[in-house]
Image (cartoon, rainbow, N blue to C red; front, side, top):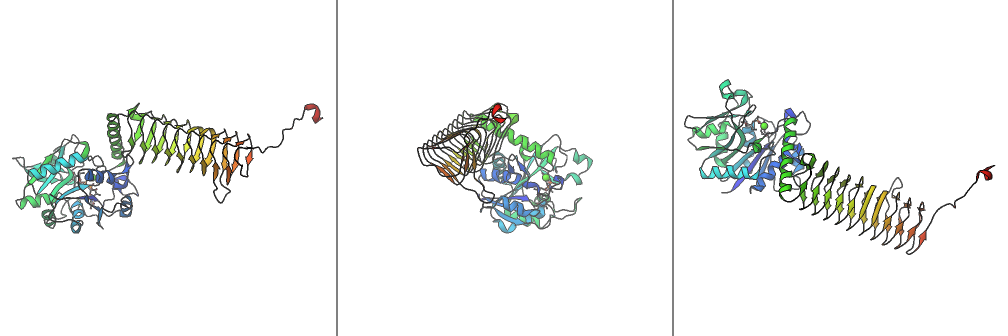
Amino acid sequence: MHYAAVILAAGKGVRMYSELPKVAHRAAGKPLISHVAGAVREAGIDDITLVVGHGREVIEEIFAGDAKIKFAVQEQQLGTGHALMQAEQEIDPACSLLVLAGDTPLLQASTIRQLIDFHQQGEYSATLLSAKISNPYGYGRVLRNIDDSFARVVEEKDASASEKSITEINSGMYCFQAGEVFRALTGISSNNAQGEYYLTDVLEVLKNKQQKIGIFLSNAEEDIYGINDRVQLAQAETLLRQRKNIALMKSGVTLIDPVSTFIDSAVQIGHDTIILPFTFIEGETVIGEHCEIGPGTRINDSTIGDGVSIEYSRVKQARVGDKCTIGPYSYLRPETVLLEGVKVGDFVEVKKSTIGKNSKIPHLSYVGDAIVGNSVNIGAGTITCNYDGKNKYPTILEDGVFIGSNTNLVAPVTIGSNSITGAGSTITRDVPPQSLAVERAPQKIITRKGRN
Ligand code: UD1
Ligand code: CA
């Protein structure tokens, strides 16, 4: 059976008190709606339509470059039923339709699969996913007939006191026969406490047409957790991180203290790598095997090889080769590439530079817009003066160069292979290979007597 999915994401999310639409808020490094779309794809459904309205540019931007995602616009947010109506043109009426909300970032592919299997095996024309939760406040409650069959869903705001005591709630996730649901949607009204077209009413319409309605009572309580405010957002964040940490530990990564380790969902880490506390690993970062990362380190969108150690440092959009050691207290900025065995020591900033094999920048340096060869040693306090206030210029240090401590390399400048600069020199002209460049005023010694 061909499946399509519609994710409802046109609402503002009033309780977030935010300029961003609710589903664009991030948990574990990804917008809420991307978590939902990701789970749908993982469940094997590629035909995805997002119903957008409030802040739609922001959501379209999130999926820019993802040509497969379709959009339907709900200009005015008149309710979840009205939202689904807007997607009709995008959906083949012959298919089965999964309908989800964009604010449930904990939803997993396994739960979607279970819902679909239940829907198919029962040959229902509509199936709703329900759960029993201890605090059902705010959710729609599932009302059943004496024979346990579906009666209707009543929203919190429309519920009587006895209905409010029901703990079986509507997750807001459904499977429908597409043609049937779009036909039935024309039969719902907005005659309720919120004056909205409730999607939940479509179930009653179908039931009255003698269609079979299934209820899949799930025990995946976390999966249906909907985010309405920032307290719930923080709770989702915690749960997502726990899941990520557990998956990593089960695949062979040691986390010394999972509670103080923050790893985004998309991050990949090889086995026998140890992550020390107070470490953030974000975005699309890939870390190899046998590394030691942290404590106190933040890495985003970077590729780190095998056997690397990084301590108390910041690494941003950089590539670090095998067996490099970084820190404590270093800053690798975008477009930094360290080849194998590089040492970047304490209080070193590297920007947009390639550092060759086994080269060392051990202490207190700034290296920007540089190409550094293999086995180069850059002495403490060395600065590439790469910026004249208007433009940036390159510094080239060829293989085997030894830069004396506290050298200023005024770019553009090239130091030929195996050359040396004397400590404290300001180098403004190119240095040929195999030579020594010194730029210093001769030392004067003035004795006390001499001063009289
Ligand atoms: C909905 C269900 C409720 C269920 C709960 C589960 C209805 C009437 N109620 O309530 O039974 O227990 O979800 O979390 O469906 N949206 C639109 N356009 C609109 C209104 C909403 O796109 O006009 C989107 C929102 O952006 C959101 C989703 O639909 O992603 C759910 O809307 P929300 O207002 O959060 O519904 P609930 O009141 O939580
Ligand atoms: Ca909700």
